[in-house]
Image 1 (cartoon, rainbow, N blue to C red):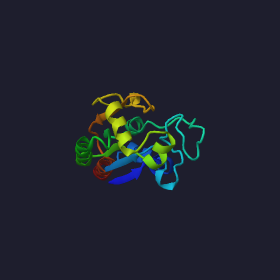
Image 2: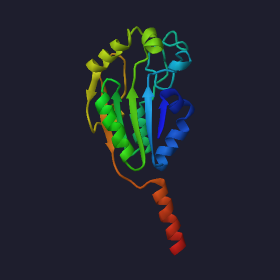
Image 3: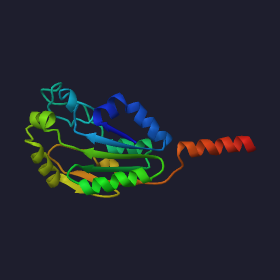
Image 4: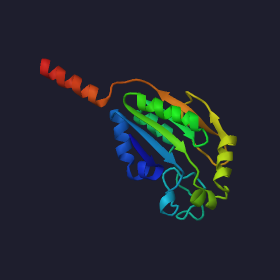
Length: 183
């Protein structure tokens, strides 16, 4: 199991994430996405929405952000879900489901960052960001992750996007070893 922030996981660790999903390594990844490097001064990161202001983007971000659930699904994750911190019970269930599945599973957690992201983008306090989630999060299980972009001021999708079974890397490896040994 891996817990990580959006910056570390998809900037610094992006290549590792993609190939672990592609290989279907048996692991669960929980990503807390607050749209910035919140603990190191509020720099923009790979999930910072277009136009958002941060310390390294005082005039607004002009880099296209990653859609994390689409990236995870397209890289091969067997389970992909997104919830906000407001959806605590649904988030808990998604984490339990992800941990109970074989293969590479991914849960994105949209989380407020009132100190850096929220303040610089005039979103108010943490509770104001939670109200925003209540007003704009749309639950749509089974939706195409490609349609799950997050755009400030617009509704965004949450729910379980992918839940499939396929052999893990180790299962395929052991099958190949047995085939070579017996063949």
